[in-house]
Length: 340
Image (cartoon, rainbow, N blue to C red; front, side, top):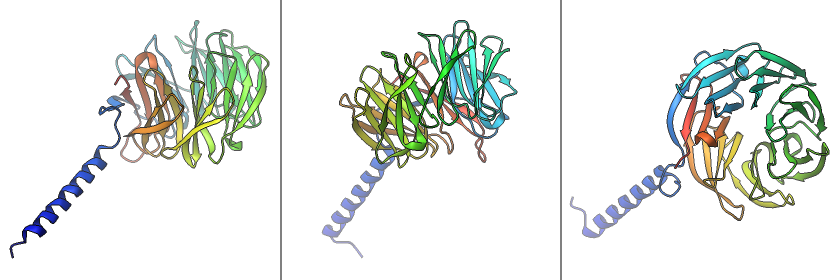
């Protein structure tokens, strides 16, 4: 039976509409028509099992350090040759890493026994070990003061002399610290207290908490990123999953936007006005940040389930994403170019 002209036109129009919707859905959001992240290579981590936690970098030496928490090791990667060159043993659930210097020092915080180990950054020989109460977690380096800060326990930041490894006291907090960041243009530290759904603001000079900001309906605030010059703090939450933007002058809410599930690391790229959010659901969410503080999703880059930690190294224009071993997917570090 030959279809009538009207029926044929309607049918063809419906087909074109369906195809256009399909291709629009396949393309996904893009920044200015180009990929905002380009996967350029992978560095295998053969034999590394279990959860992979945070990373640190030595940009000048082009080395990447990976806390293989489930493996009890710290993996040392040479970025020039794109291969692992050392696997450092003897740690108890390594969670946070910090590279400091000169002189070169590698700091490793351990969730299992609460220790923060200081290693020679060239030879990796153990130099000092400071024991905190428990659950030593994120590590941050203050190059201006040559100090290292370590989050731990029920609520504290330990302070370490980056040259000698001596303890310089601590800053007490209202709860266990997750991600925290040091202000470059001031003396404040912004700390995610995930158990309370708060951001604690501490002063490095006085060693005290000066303010506590509630983040509203979002809770389980783990990752954090900071725009120093724009006075904006980006807080990643898991319940529900999303990004909350706060004004660092007042703690005022500027914006909020949903994200993919299980965000654990987040970095702000001021050169490109972008936010990279690594989500354990299997994506890196790339968001564009407006001058007003508003954020909008421009791309969702597929990674792998459980790939929740990453490190942005601006000097190398690279984002490194940790991929754990799950089923047929072997553990590796995926390297993304952010130069677009």
